Length: 193
Ligand code: ADP
Image (cartoon, rainbow, N blue to C red):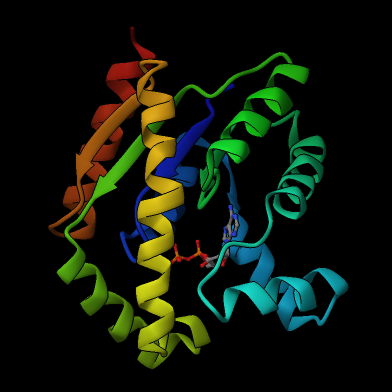
């Protein structure tokens, strides 16, 4: 399997690039943010719980998130591979993902990270908030808190994969196609090794 973690701060463009990557490599897309939003919309128990964290810009607890990912992997394990988008977001989630994939005799192939500076990200999120209807993109305090959480809890996950020699950073500014080109270059050079 080709299992790719698409990493980067809020607003880095993970959703946009994931949509293109799944098509090119025939992968299954798991966006934990999308799954939470789907549950919020349908007012499931998971949605009600997730909402209480997401609206504040906090992370949904690891155990809840990991259980959801575990179910998703079990349902799709016969596919060619996954793009994990917005997951893992903590070291504990990274360790859980490694265990889940090992159980299915597979592993994380690589982490590709979109690197974008914070001023640009805030601008993008505010723009997105005007059209997406996402409550967490419309409140400046929530946006700020998401960056704080990203620095404190999520950034260390890059080091976790870098230590395993699975990390590749990609410049995340430019057109959608330019960034896609950089990502595919990083992915293709890795899988030929
Ligand atoms: P963004 O990357 O723009 O913040 P996402 O859709 O990835 O958007 O995530 C939206 C929110 O959903 C996060 O701020 C967080 O509250 C929650 N969330 C998404 N993925 C995770 C995860 N892996 N662990 C915990 N919470 C998550």
